[in-house]
Length: 252
Ligand SMILES: C[S@@+](CC[C@H](N)C(=O)[O-])C[C@H]1O[C@@H](n2cnc3c(N)ncnc32)[C@H](O)[C@@H]1O
Image (cartoon, rainbow, N blue to C red):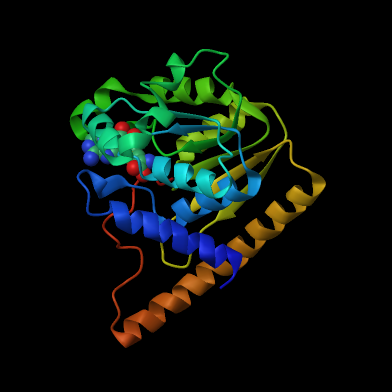
């Protein structure tokens, strides 16, 4: 098995462990969890910020990947304010709850909270909230959250958006005012995958990110169409309908 496949299998294992738990309707995909494990193990970030901890699926993937990397992550902060999620997060982390600092909003973080070497965005958008709460968190609040964590991104850091998150990514790109390499990674199961931003990238990283994104853009839509056709002919279920993949904000 290739190293990439092994990371994907690790992510799917975490996904499957969480998928039956209370509130698991919007957890991160196995593919995203595997990519996060890969980044933590390969890049060994010292400080990690998660925006939208939910019930703790990504939090768990980070903690376990950090263990495999010899305890690489020294400072782990999670943003979450939904009471139900906070309860589930504590239950799911168990004895490890104390290893993660939880804050309500990125805007609550003091300016000396960072800088963070890895920022994972899987929340902080209006549509992440239950319909009755959406009016309390409009575009200004979304932008203020993105601006708050953007100010805490370390030199050479990675920022990962789970799912599409078009509005949050647009705000980040407009505000960051630093060089970055953008990379699209998505699987062949019809789910959206992740968007990666490598800050202050080396020339080798720029070349790699460009090559991966170009291959993705050229190959991914055709491959998916073929897989869909074959699945249809063989009577297999359609792609991208796994019920527990987070919608994760807008899909623009
Ligand atoms: C995509 S979810 C985050 C999932 C999280 N990263 C995980 O993998 O467990 C985005 C946001 O939706 C909200 N949310 C998620 N699950 C919820 C639930 N079952 N009930 C209410 N709000 C929820 C939380 O505010 C959360 O931060």
